[in-house]
Amino acid sequence: MDIEEKLRQVKERYEELNQAMADPSIFDRPDEYRELTIEHTQLKELVEDYNEWQSIKNQYTGNSELIEMNEDAELTELAREENKELKERLAELEEEIKFKLIPKDPDDSKNCIVEIRAGTGGDEAAIFAGDLFDMYRRYADSQNWKMSVLSVADSEKGGFKEIVFELSGSEVFGKMKYESGVHRVQRVPETESQGRVHTSASTVAVLPEVNDDVEINIDMKDVRVDTFRSSGAGGQHVNKTDSAIRLTHEPSGVVVECQQERSQHQNKEKALIMLKTKLYNMEMEKIRSERAADRKSQVSTGDRSAKIRTYNFPQGRFTDHRINLTLYNLDDILKGNIGDVIKSLRVEENLEKLNAIMN
Image 1 (cartoon, rainbow, N blue to C red):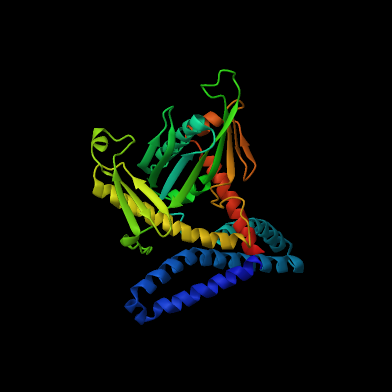
Image 2 (cartoon, rainbow, N blue to C red):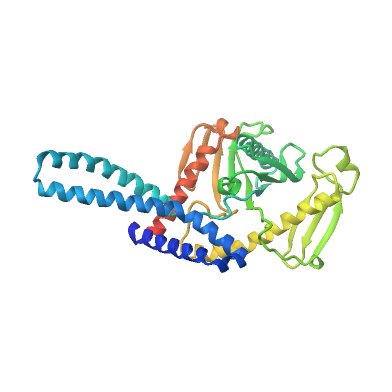
């Protein structure tokens, strides 16, 4: 399908929306009206671009006919000059339109829950999990996001066996979703007397947080609630009372914990959000798996078992294996400067989506 045919379809849908929204009875169906308004807003800019594209194309065609006739040398030269500018604008506008045609991921604007777990490598893996957490904390600061730690299991040698936290702000999941997978580190541990490089790994899972408008029905009869004393940071209070909450959803086997709030009630509220998020993402994962059977995306599979990165300390090398991106500014990246990496991953994903649309 060429771009013009795709734009015709968009314009037809836009006109259908105009007619539907002009029907007075639509106000009796507020939910439907809200959905139509959102879609109308999303398509409006694209239709305006298409109208401009058609207008410029018509001007270009008219000038080309004038040049072909060549009846007036001065007019012919003016038409040639104008067509140079029109051709450039057509190319620019076409590129803009192509990327606007890419369907937006509705989850991109959501907050997210991030889980970092030490994998193979024992103490060194836990220390690396701490490095990843610090990298994301700094990146979140640079984006003016809010970070809230939900659950933490410290490691005796430093770092974390596991840490779960929430990030909230603008376009959080849209940027953080590329971090899901296995992160591998190659370096000489402090405890290594022979100076040998060890390879360890930590896994990262990034889940879009469920909004209030998404209905996830949980029968609390299916949920076992356990209380325990918090083991992580949080001051003296959390260590003196059984304020931490563990929820076990018995039908699915999903277990979540929250221990960082000061009261049991607050921890239970947070834990319920985590449980809903996990159950929602389990369902979405089934849908994504079905789609992946048709087209395998190399960027945003969300596969937590896939090795996505290598952090090589001796060489100061950072490699993202999904897009064969290698950089030699590892120290800078670990300070939270991962914006350019995320941008590169987003561009690659958009190109994949664009190719799928145009083919």
